[in-house]
Length: 504
Image (cartoon, rainbow, N blue to C red; front, side, top):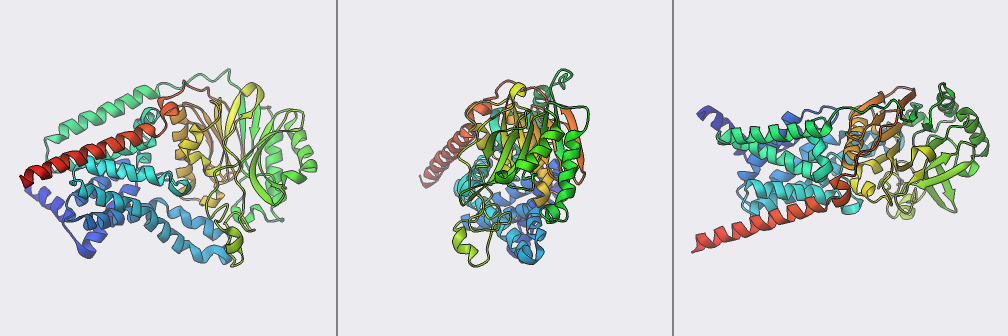
């Protein structure tokens, strides 16, 4: 026991360069819980080490830098895919790749640094650390249009614990993960906490299994077809390759037996909606009376939109949806007209400000299949956007082009977050991805069928039914935000009372 305690002390005590490396290493260990590795036990150990390091901080300044260093290590690994979009056009954007990763990791780490400083000022206890870091994750999910990618709570996605997101939301899962980490750290120093920690873990795991339940019978459900042309981003708009990718989609659309709905990925049609007439006829002939939802660009005056459109069974164009939550510096650049003069454009846009945002989330009426909520690309990582739908849909429908995210971690993390949206809403989600992973996901987040990354083809599968509306669909992130604020106020009050007793 004495040797074990000395090891823990050796990990938490270092300062200077050694301490910085230790904190960064704790963050890297914590990031192993993200897809595709999904090593959540190691991630909990990483967060436990982060907590012990935070507790051992001698000042608020040291608490900040320990939190920042851990955050830098975490985001540098979890978001390493961020370099991939810059490598698509190597001559134009390649030089930005290392700067993008360092700036992204360092910038997001500021939230964790602020949490470390706040936790120390509130006494450095477990509740203060959990509440401060959960609050930091909440803030980064909303501020500056938000970026809730690789949230701490995502480490639970491959486990039954993910089912609790229907009640407590993704930030509730973050609080659960940090609570588990504090329990692990406490077990390392006070073994009497081990039994309580194990009991709580068994309760949440078992409860998640109970919430998951058995798979449903889908024999009478309508069939959806997901089309995956597998167009690498560096070839997607190349005139020499466009006919190949379009032909793959037409052949998949015409394949027998006929489904009830066909879904193509984001920007899968190689012409603008304004010039679609001849292409529309080819698509309608291949569909032979089956509606197609497809992604395309459309122009309106000087504006360009990233759009999802319904091709009706009779071959006419039906309702459309313009993507409303755009990717900063990807689909648009703030002050884009000015920066374009210096050759700075969004990665997915070539002129000025890039794409324009649509007005709001909206539903697409797909007849007998019900109404679908379209989510274009990374809109599926924003639970608040899904909650903002004008009405409850029958299913979620994601059209995405994950070719931007490379072949290693980005596409799998994107898929994992789509699974979480399904559980949160109690709704099935169908996902058509250009290069994969295309998937049919049920209302409990189970991937029922998928087309692997880097494969061209199509997938037919029955559309799972929706479940009852969840608590999260009604409360959103308000409960997590309120609980975090209350916890911080309680800790502040207790810490103030403790300091007054010391002064007396």
